[in-house]
Structure formats: C-alpha cells, structure tokens
Length: 104
Image (cartoon, rainbow, N blue to C red; front, side):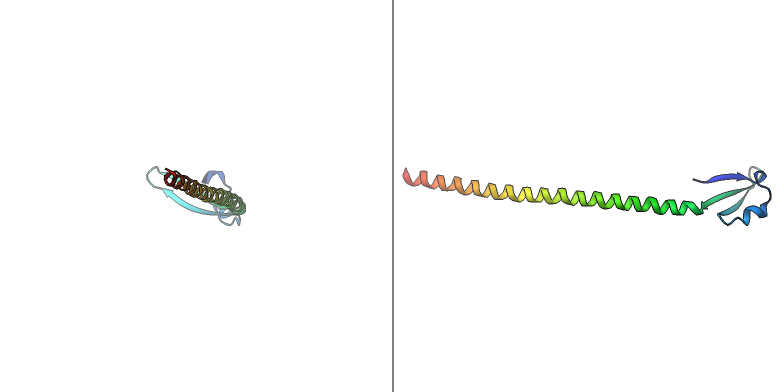
C-alpha cells in the first residue's frame, strides 16, 4: 500500500513537501547509512475510493443480511408448520388408539 520514493528521484525536497495531494513522512535510516526516504501515506483520491468500497460493502452487507433474514424466517415458518402437523398426527394417533382400546 505504501509507495517508497527515493530522495534522488525528486527534484527538490521542498517541492515534495509542498505538494497538496500527498502527505509525506521523512525517515532516516541510520543502520544502513542510506539517504532518507519519503513515504507516501495516502493520496486524496484514495479517500474517495475507500468510501466507494465501503458503500459497496455496506450495500452487499445489507443484501446478505436481508437474504439471511428471509431464509431464517422461512425456516422458522417451516418448523412451525411441521410442529403443527406433528401435533395433528399425534392427536389423530391418540384418537385412533382410544377407539381401538374402547372397542376391544
């Protein structure tokens, strides 16, 4: 995500610092004895891209959640119907058992 720009690649340090589109950090590398590097933190258009990605993710997230809610509602309705059917079958079986027991 970070783009590394060497100090020798730019015309002057003041031109880079005064650029309004970028924000740079300067860091000296003391261990490797190399000239300081300028790290591009974020570009102004990247913020807009980030908001677009977040918006698309939010729309997809809402779609997935509504689909999940629909599936869960259907599953609950199916289970309620199944339990109702099961109770009707149990009532019918108990009624048949009572008739068989009383006639015998």
